[in-house]
Amino acid sequence: MADATTTATDEVAIDFHTLFRIYKDGRIDRFAGTQILPPTTHPDTGVRSKDVVINPGTGLSARLFLPKITADHSAGKLPFLLFIHGGAFCIETPFSPNYHNHVAALAAEANVVALSLHYRRPPEHLLPAAYDDAWEALNWAIAHSEDGDGPEEWLKHHADFQRIFVAGDSAGANIANTVLVRVGSEGVRNGSRVLGMILFHPYFHNGEPNKLLDVIFPTSSGATDPRLNPAGADPNGLAKLGCESVLIFVAKKDWLKDRGWSYYEALRKSGWVGKVEIVESEDEDHVFHLLNPACEKAVDLMKKTVSFLKQV
Image 1: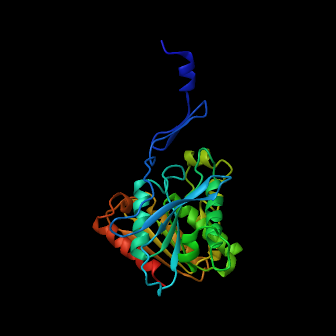
Image 2: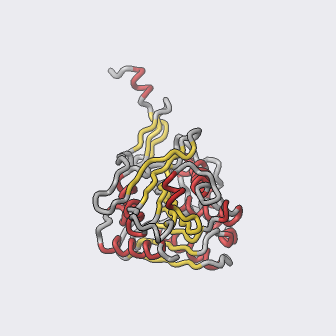
C-alpha cells in the first residue's frame, strides 16, 4: 500500500505532457530543454561566451557571445544582437545545446556581439514577466553605449548600439515583436538605433482555444491581446514597429506557418515604413534549423540571416 504522504506529494495539479507538470505541493517538473552547456571558447571559430546577470533582484540573466577579436581594431565596434529563445515561453534556455550552438554560430558568421536572454519562464513566473525581461535586457545592454555607464566590458568595448538587431524563434519571436513595438512607442536611450528584427517560425495567437496560455498567461485576453496576436488584435499598432527592416522565416510543414504569413501581411498593410521580407523553407518543420543545423535548408537560412545582420 502506498504511503499516504507520498501519494499526496505526488498528486498532479496540471500536466502539459511535453512541457511541464505542476504538482499540488507546488513542485514543477520540466520535460524538455533542461540540458545545460557551460560557457566556452569555440575551438574553431574563437567565439567566446560568458554568463551575465542583468538584474540580481529578479534573477534575469543572459549568455553573452563575443566573436574572435583580432589585433586589428580598424573595423571598429560590431553590431549588437539581442536573441530571445523559444520553447512555448516555458522551456529551453540560452544554455541548452541547441540555443548555445545557434547563437554562437550567429556571432561567428555574422560577426556580431550577441546577448542570448534567459528570461523568467512560466509557470514559476507567469507572463507578461518574459516581455518585461526582454525590454529590461535591451535597455541594460544599451546602457553600455558610449554615453552610458553599463558594467559589462565586452559590451562597452565591442558592441555598436547604432546597429542593434533583435531576433527570436517561436515564442521568442513573439517576445521580440513586443519589444520592437515598445521601441517604436517609447524609443531607446542614448541615441541608439535598432536596424532590424528577425522572426524564426514565430508563434502568434490566432483565436483558437489555448489551454497552455490560460495557465501561463492568465491575465491575457487571448486573441485580443496585441502581445499575443498583433496582426489580429491591433494591426495598426504594427505601424509603430521600432526598427527599419524585418526578416521572417516560416517552414512549409510548420503548424505555425500561416500565422507567420498573417503577421507579414498585417505588417505590410499597417502603414509601417520599413522593409519586410518573408522566406518559406520547403519540406521543413518547426525550428528545423536548430535541430539539424547542417542540413541544406538550415545552411541557406543561416546565410540569409547573416546577410541581414550585415546589412549596414
